[in-house]
Image (tube, rainbow, N blue to C red; front, side):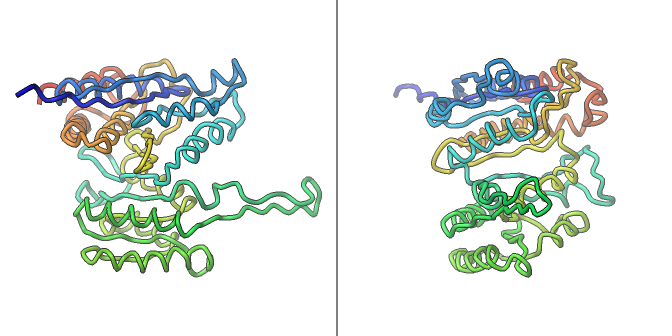
Length: 359
């Protein structure tokens, strides 16, 4: 019998702007420890897309790079956003371009409170805050459909249209049901919408939701308007298991989710194409004011790396990184805030890597 072949994964890394490269370095440290312990290989290719490159060369993200990304199993992204670049240029030119070009039609956002992490919600703990938001990621208001009429005049009209296709809605809903089944927690999917006002878009979502639910007899279904979801995420977060929603509402409620799980310093997410290349990232921005100071919290990037491993099928390794993060939030950090952790960025990364290798 020959030795078992080592599994190998091709990963594109975009450190990005501000503190992005710093937190990605710690994420890679944790991933290296996990690959060493669990016997798989990560082939890393670095890309320098972001604000600095744009300011130097005028290039944002060439189509040739997007084609290259299609050859990778996953992309590990730091952060995009530069104080000297007008808002929207990098976000649309890099983030949205990758999501749309690689058809990353699911934005997956776990909302999970770890032990030892402060939440602004009184009397709620880790047992109460553990759900997932499945956000449609390539349609809705983000398609850029619409335009101006009489721009710059007192009679100006601006129209922004939400585009929802049956195919796009259905594949997002199916993903949510499958995810609830796999999670096997409350076995519940909640549709978040606004059926009383957005009577076309969410009529389609509601009908498709009801039809798809018939294929999942073991999954309970629920519906709530987006405003009610915002209230209940704060009042009764334990009510939720998997929430599924459109692009715009998903964008809003996931930031609320980040705050109830302790802030942007711990929140990670994935842009998923189940049939292609997926991208994983910490949710917080590039935080340029902390750049180069070795004080930013890297746990969100480390958690994004764990999400990536889980998605690639290295579930044991992903769980070990998560255990390392929980150990640190429970026993080590004074706070998640930059400069207040009691440790430097690199020290936190070292502690995660050491835990992954030795426990």
